[in-house]
Length: 264
Ligand SMILES: Nc1ncnc2c1ncn2[C@@H]1O[C@H](COP(=O)(O)OP(=O)(O)OP(=O)(O)O)[C@@H](O)[C@H]1O
Ligand SMILES: [Mg+2]
Image (tube, rainbow, N blue to C red; front, side, top):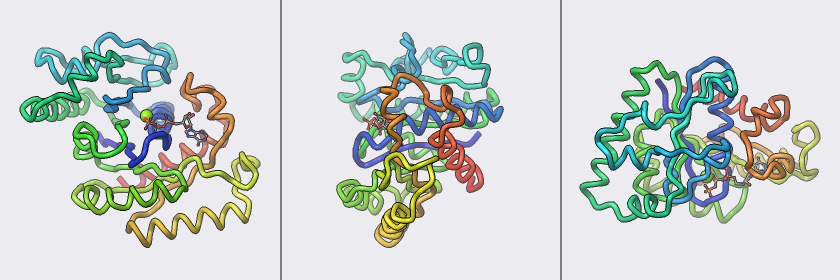
């Protein structure tokens, strides 16, 4: 089993959408895929999947008797693809328990995440996709540490670039995974770009950002994804590529998936 995580320095770059859409596209190819919501500080995956999950990863981290079987939700019947998800709790009390966890509990949490990874692998999962909180929260780092590939998601915005740069130097250089940058929500000259294809002016802008990232962070941009009004307009009510598999956004995610799989 291979693990791919999505992380960012700043919030709102598109981690949750990219995680859920990539997991869906991999499952649609027939790969048994799990998505884990490790964004305990601002969990959104339940909303995106239209689910209210009673038993969550938060419970697994605090209760030694729970296993992956107890927290995984299957979408096999609903979507006819081998897609599974484990959610972070939206209960404020449980979110607070994570924030207040002492060193001992944090060590227990990491052990339980590792046990969950082993359980998924033993149960024939091909891929696990991890959504994280922005910044350097311990739980996000746990997710990054167990990943084979990490996608650092950035908007083509100088605020994002300067903060991300220091995180890359101090954190990403310590990781064993293959680390890539995904530029997302790139605002094209004509927004959205026609048929999802960059104009020559857009291409210049994208190439400029890709070069800055290469020069300043020593990281490759694996995919640059335009800002699509249709994605924003859906209001995060569903997994976009499930509903619009032919849309250019879904095709960009497919391209991202192919590039990631090639590097694993
Ligand atoms: N390529 C895109 N084009 C247009 N809108 C997008 C695109 N990708 C994501 N969005 C929109 O950006 C917003 C933020 O996306 P998302 O919640 O996935 O970001 P996030 O990084 O997970 O945020 P947080 O750090 O708060 O968890 C959402 O409203 C989503 O619809
Ligand atoms: Mg998110």
